[in-house]
Length: 158
Ligand SMILES: [Zn+2]
Image 1 (tube, helix red, strand yellow):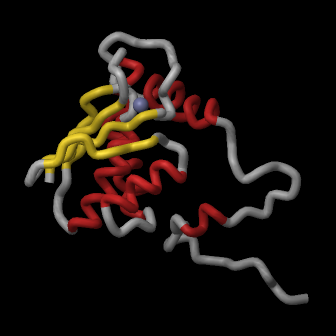
Image 2: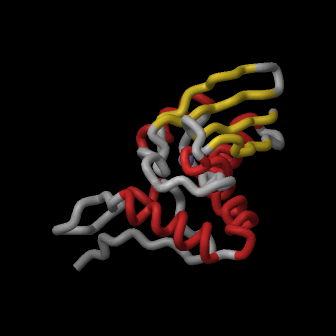
């Protein structure tokens, strides 16, 4: 009997491509939005100290860095493909971009005053853009549906 299962040493860990590999038989390859929200908002935002700020920054950057995208457009397409939200550039200056996200995963949640909850998704952009431009990129969340804004929006400083 041959060993068909691919193995990899534990130090090297997983790649983003590995995330698509599944051996599930009966259940689909997607999980409901409420599970993503529960991990993000109940698990990270509410359970971690300081609303998870340093943790989401570290997690997001690592994920962003691992994504198979090579340009800003590819990154925005990827956000749509993963159904995180529907992003578009709403302001473009030499060293600054504003990216608004329609239909963000947080859309429709009850409003919480002075709460910007989509920091992880911004950190994912930060990780991907830092790699694409090969320099430090800073992404800050400036609007959020949950905060009562008309959409979620990020300021990207290059
Ligand atoms: Zn959002």
